[in-house]
Image (cartoon, rainbow, N blue to C red):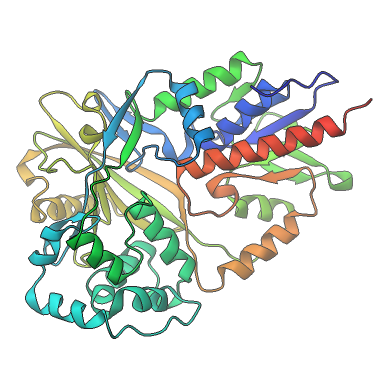
Length: 445
């Protein structure tokens, strides 16, 4: 626990009660900072909250903790105590009409169509040079033309709603890092994929998962913030207003709040538009979630599956029972099916529901007749979109916001950052440490 600040306590407002915001509030309030969290949803958790329908608990996609940071790992155990499960990893990818283990294994290689396998072997020796910019060039230079065409190109088009040639290579690096997760399983090139598939490592990836769903982590963290004197307001949307001398006012429907620091974990575009005006456009993707209650699910023990096939609407599925059997009634199964939507795009819920059920049936995941109920959830600002010139736009936005010294950007949305929850926790811990150090140095003698 950080040493408390004894002089008149500074104040902080944290906009957004997701993983990043809760961790910041916890670290600051533990040191004696007067903290207020403003969360627009009905409960904390942000992009990692759980959605509950009767006896079914659905996370927003396959959420879990996996970190190489001792400080983050210790923090997770500190918050959860013994209320967690340690689980191994089993995930898959659906392409060329069938499921393959992911990361790829020996069995996957020999199940590829002979022509595809032959072309991949040729690609080992005939990959083009990387042009230093685009997603497509990055993938082609590392995986070759065949895997690019049969998997990466179609999945990226479907997921991002952008031409891969117009996506930045940072999207490729981030996507591969997030999909592989465990650094011991190197699949950063076609040669590495071949080596991994033919000479698989025996290392087992372990995840930490809160018993009862991801909300248990957020609830435990929120309760600790409140015990330390912090305040949490849900159902409270907030916007920034510039005050005099670079100060900030945080407006909510019922009040105007002032603080020494405003930690912004909401979308960076909202902060910029309210303080500066419409600036360079930074695109986001919205998630349309189909939360499916079923009599039976054929998940083959997988926790999640990527779907690259362009003829299928879904881009990814996850299976709550594989994370914690307690998230699903004993005699049932459940699925979280994800469809990405461009920012501001419309969702045809009824029509898409039919297509999602069709996709799951055709992929052998769940038969039409086994679907009992389908719930819907729209999750805005789920992913940043790294277009070719996104770095220039982001630099300009951050440069404009630097004129407000009381504003601190944090988290996935606040930094336009394609990251994992563990990254957000580590980032928030570092931000809190820097802020506390600065406050102590500025304390009156």
